[in-house]
Amino acid sequence: MTAPLKHIPEENAAAKARAHMLAPECEVLTIPDSEPLKLDGEKLLAPFSIAYKTYGQLNADKSNAILICHALTADQYVASRHPVTGKPGWWERLVGPGRPIDTDRFFIICPNILGGCMGSTGPASIDPKTGHPYGLNFPVITIGDMVNAQVRLIDHLGIDQLFAVVGGSMGGMQVLGWCSRHMERVYSAIPIATAAWHSSQNIAFHEVGRQAVMADPNWCSGNYYEKGLVPRNGLGVARMAAHITYLSEDALHEKFGRNLQNRSERTFSFDADFQVESYLRHQGSTFVDRFDANSYLYITRAMDYFDLAAEHGDVLANAFRGTQTRFCVVSFTSDWLYPTRESRDIVQALNAVAANVSFVEIDSIKGHDAFLLEEPEFAATVEGFINSCAKRRGLAR
Image (tube, rainbow, N blue to C red):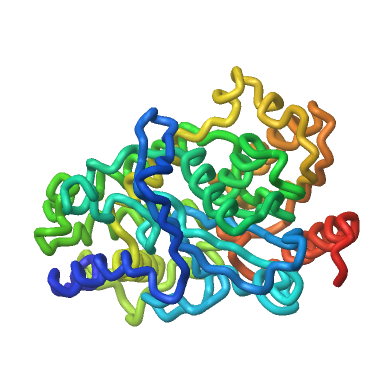
């Protein structure tokens, strides 16, 4: 009988976890003590760092910048090989030379979110007051805090207005945050497979994942860094549970059915008899190699707290009142994590304030993760919207 998750010696796993903080092959902006970030929870964070990658060239009048906001488990390596996993960039289907988000034409900025574990300040970072990793002493953050930290980066780059802000899932929440808190700085926006608030069902899924992490004895109440430990099994189970929500029933059935894994008969054990079990165990194991457990807790909590309507008197339209941003809202028919009705709520709120908005629902069986996969209609939608906005703004091809 095999172990539930691939075993890595704890000292090696801990070394990998700490290596995340090096954020190789990217740039890092550090904001000093004198310029603290005021968080939605009323605390001040300083100093803090934002790690980021850029692609393409910023034009003379700095009008061709596109900010890409990543989802929960992604990072800044949107269109380049990942330094930890060695895998291609997570959105190379969409971002690159001649792609729908064309790096020959636009200047792409993709930051690692505040609270992340690939170079931006998060719970694994060193607290300058103690000289030790923050752990659970890191302040609880929100999607709005992530956006406000990104504003500091855009200010640093000298960009007054972004041509576009684009993102899916939690990245889409950041897009909406930008368009609400800093609407004058966003010419166009593409929120994808997202929602204006986190549903109780999604909060419930996140709580299961957090409890799995915290039940791992190696979590040590969040103080596992200096003990040389990693709550590997707990984080792996959290990833397995979450990954199910990223797929659809049809996609799971088409990919795995009830097929057995490398065997012709059931073993009558708790080994991974079925292909889908083996797949989920692999997802859990590989995720632990590149992600910090405490970051997972903080980021999922930030998503749970996200409620754009609540920030504006429980009227979502108020979040966008006065906006001049051009919107393209995208959903997928088989996405049950952020179903189309939640995108329609966003569209209706935008219509209520006479915003310029397009809405596209893509027919797909691939579930929530469809925006990361090969979907020609989705790619064409993004490319068409960007080209239309670029033409209106006078950006030459």
